[in-house]
Image (cartoon, rainbow, N blue to C red; front, side, top):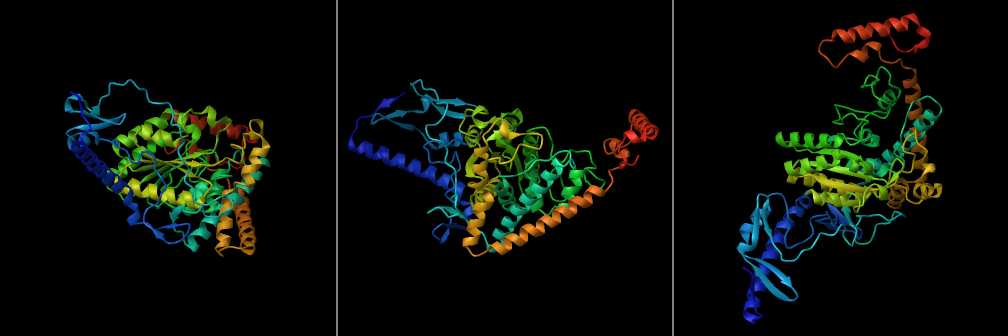
Length: 492
């Protein structure tokens, strides 16, 4: 039964001191959640000097009187004999009899009928370190990056850019059947890859070739997969741009949208069961959030406390569908809180911010054994793929603006040049050498024969069933009968 309390000075003093002790207790609990990675990582401010905690804010972690986490509501109820509310400068006390006890935990009740707003008045902020001209934003906090790491990240982004240009042109020349680039999203590829360990399992979408390159996948193997020759690990069974490597813990790409997201939750749960010091990382586009797999994956990961980092590349377009027609929510990061997942929005074209956010997300996922959602804001400068013409649904001026003024490569180059780590001579040498390497591996891969016809019928059954044996014989006989109608570089 609610009791209205008069404003006696003594009682108010008791009430406020009790309330402050409660808030302090919650804040102490909240601060423990944030501080773990500060002990293992070195962060710096734009003004210089060490700093122990990044101010990149993860949604769902702001100070609040009642902070809801999985299985935490019961503990909160046990800690409090009464719940306090403030209304119109008067204190209203609701005792235990006015708390509804559900299987998911105790819920405070209210006599007011109030619906939750469809969206917050303020949008979630975007964590950023470098401005568009490559200058650190005053007061920005980020993980320190050595000269060696910074130069490697920049060189990898340039390699990715040069490689994409050459293979895209090869497709236009009819030498490849299909290709898609990472243009405009090189920063997310390389910065996130640099923040991970090779022990972490990567479940990519299809625009993350930079991640597998960073892990040491050779350019020649990229070319072999694109041409589907006999050296392709997938034996020519996949379409181009569907790389994979068991050795590098990079699961082979699947064409269907969003299938990798719930798989990542499962991989992460297996790592948790095996007590591995690693996590699962999965990449997805903004369009993938409209798939049921996305929502099922986030719920599974949250309920199972799976150490997985979901990285959404919000590049503005799901092929021809703009984000304002994709969802009504405040982007993607806001969806995490609904599932009980800590989330952050980061400038995906800012290499330092992305690297710091993914590094922190990975450490939280492993140390605390919980999922993290990262929304990386970027822009897809290129067409969706070689099967698309994006000028049909967006203005060329918009594309050019992001290609020049907002390029993650240009921004990061300005920063490393100001540090004295890069110059025009380094740039010219890198681009020239990379172009030669890519052309060499492409020309070599193009000349290698395709996998034998037999490979179409293997690697599924321990013993090939009779119906497949009959199909194999049928197609082999057909090729022998009319050899000119079939490719000559496919052994039968």
